Length: 269
Ligand SMILES: [Zn+2]
Image 1 (spheres, protein in one colour):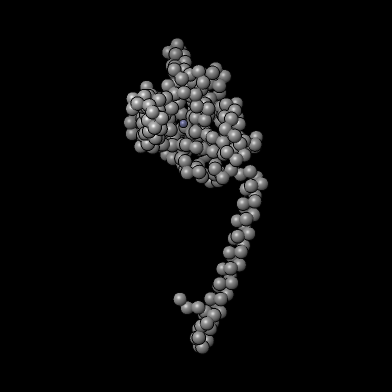
Image 2: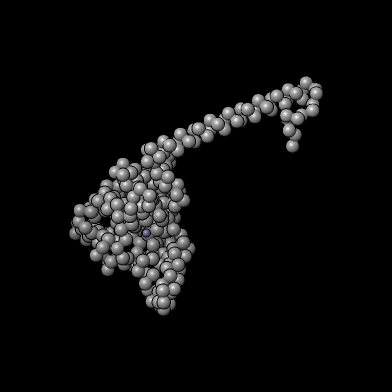
């Protein structure tokens, strides 16, 4: 590479070029300086504002979470007439075949259905306003992701001395089999504390009290394991829409019970 400072060109054109390059380099240095100062200021601003580095999303991102707005992807109503936000997936109700999900990636690397994005963001903003700092530990999963997680849990139980059969049974209490996990819908998120500003119980308590206002419910509450098929998980939240979430909060019904109650009332009318 030619070093301009030891450039031996004597023709005017060569010198002009050298000067131009030097000017260019000075310009670059100045720009780098400005950039560094800007990045520093932005960093301080983010810290001061308590802006999350885990779920900060810009305004241009899709805002399609309102349940009555046509979705950007997926279907508004499934083949059996179920609204997308009330689609039931559990160990007795498998994910529909060829289920399609339109994903948006969160800053932490997890993804969710675009239709719940703005509701999730609003909820996280509200939490931070209250001084609670959450992270999305897990969002959308493919069937392969789900299988991998299940295998890890089974291996863990095996390592603790459980037999193959016992290990599988134990793991199945906590990890859904592929095709039976709500995470495959893209409508469920595991929410934990950031571990720096907040502890787990603070996040869980806040969610328990407030999540319904944003359309999210604690999907596997204590005392409903028989019905949901999953043990108490204070971190697992499912988007069902504000209306259903409010109803479920007021009545204490889990999703399975709520859907059954809806069916019954429809039969009666
Ligand atoms: Zn979960």
